[in-house]
Image 1: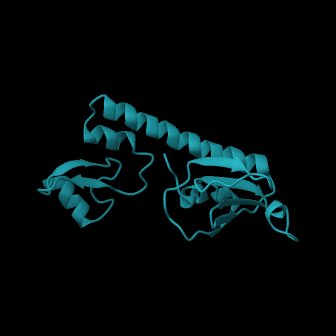
Image 2 (image 1 turned 180 degrees about the vertical axis):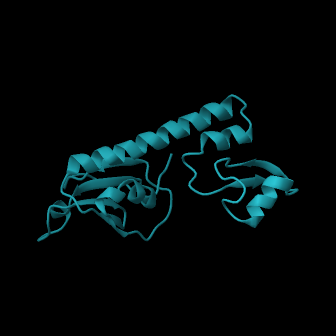
Image 3 (image 1 turned 120 degrees about the vertical axis):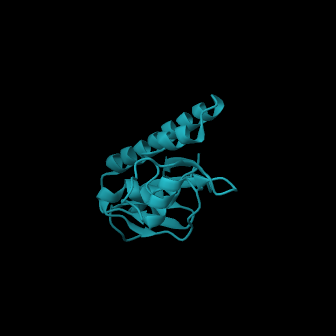
Length: 156
């Protein structure tokens, strides 16, 4: 599974990240602590102290992936690392759940239901004939917009 820097920015919100994110791709597969002798990998996000990357700066924590950065308002490396590992664990569990459902012949609605916590926006899936196949069930009538209400009611 690959994650984006914006996903980590959301998980690290308690540290008031200053984001400099230019790429929005889902490209992060691993996380490592930054060390000066480490050969960088383009699919890895590195975490370290700003002073380890730049001269004449403070001890605040920075997360770097290619040219994208999150500068955090903390010096607590362990807390940041634990938060990042929690994010990786959360999405790994979800990914494993999806794979198990897919290989056991689950219906599309089952996949949507198992993704209720991950999907932060309402999702409605229609087939090529514009007929209802599945939707996020944590959004009811009157919670999104008129089109959502119509799709829930009519199914197409």
